[in-house]
Image (cartoon, rainbow over all chains, first blue to last red; front, side, top):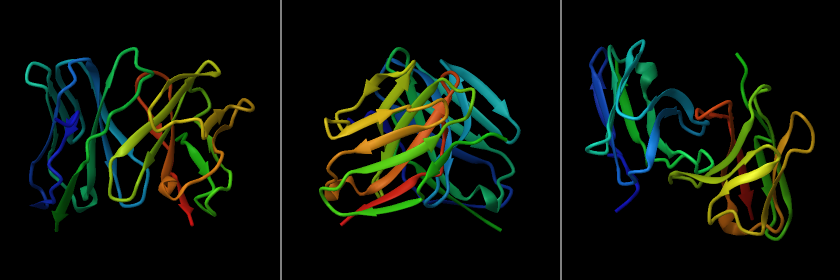
Length: 112
Length: 111
């Protein structure tokens, strides 16, 4: 079983749609959960991070963590064509040098 | 807005040569990292660095790799004898706590 898994997509939605991106993980030691956005051939851009279970909202983005089911979600409201990118979840355990374990990413396409 | 910078953007080298990839982290950050991403694959952790020493490294980070913070602003990754399979994007990241901010990457091509 891979440590961090994401549906690779592509996920294609119309502009203005609500997008749900998901990630599952197997390591119970993960405590911090990051979401990154990566445009083609660019560096990952930090969108949000959360600690342990719960929700966190930032503008059009909401991150949700359910540690009991080892399930992470990122919701994007009012999606825009500029949101078209690959979205990477990257959890981290405490006391592990802050090492991030990346999923393979979900490619999102928002069509005008 | 402060950002991580990396040079060069693209490095081409021959197998067996040494390369040094350079990074300037965000100025008040204390934690520094290198990751790599082979084309079409996941981003993979290489090493984390804090308080002038390695705090964690992956299996990829073998004796051919080393990191250094030679002064107050630069953070470097050295690959002593490059192999074809070292061809990848190399990302530097820095952070003040658990969050990590990535640079634009250096594309390393080993021929």
